[in-house]
Amino acid sequence: QKEVEQNSGPLSVPEGAIASLNCTYSDRGSQSFFWYRQYSGKSPELIMFIYSNGDKEDGRFTAQLNKASQYVSLLIRDSQPSDSATYLCAVIRGGSYIPTFGRGTSLIVHP
Amino acid sequence: DTGVSQDPRHKITKRGQNVTFRCDPISEHNRLYWYRQTLGQGPEFLTYFQNEAQLEKSRLLSDRFSAERPKGSFSTLEIQRTEQGDSAMYLCASSKGAEGGTQYFGPGTRLTVL
Image 1 (spheres, rainbow over the protein chains, first blue to last red):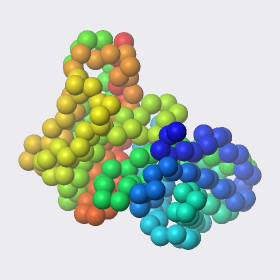
Image 2 (image 1 turned 45 degrees about the vertical axis):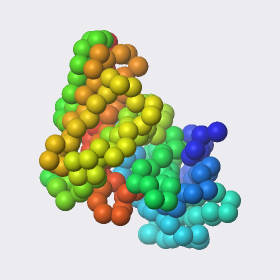
Image 3 (image 1 turned 60 degrees about the horizontal axis):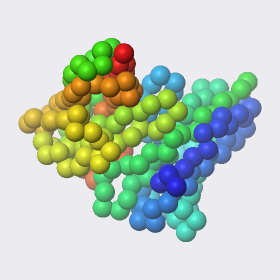
Image 4 (image 1 turned 135 degrees about the vertical axis):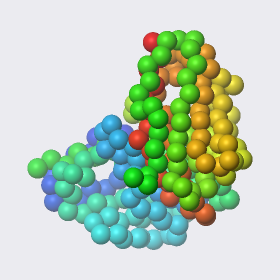
């Protein structure tokens, strides 16, 4: 079992819809959770981080964390074609500074 | 530009040759990371430095790989006796303080081993 699991997709949503991206992790000692966006041919860039159970909102993005169920998700409201990219989930164990990345989920937002 | 820079951006080499990549992190960042990424996969951790100290190295990393960060500034990643399986994007990232996961990535070096 991989430490951080993501469905590779692609996830296809129409413009204006809500895109829901999910990530599960195996290490119960994980404390910090991150979402990165990676456009094709580019390097990852941080979108959001979340440390506590519940929801965290930043503009059109909402990160959701459920440590009991060991999953973290990213919701993108009012999806735009410019949101089309691969979304990487990263998890850090408590006391560590090294993230473990999932393989990413490809999101396609079509007009 | 005060972001993370990497050089070269592309490297084509023949199997068996040695290659060296350079990374210049954001100046006030004390942590520097090297990752390898292949198509369809997320970044795979290789090694990381806190200032000039190399604190962790992936156990998956072959002895052909070595990294340095003299004086806690720029870093180099060397691959000796390259193999075709080393073909990948090599990413460098930096972070500061307690924000280990808030990493800023460079543009990467694309290595092709023929």
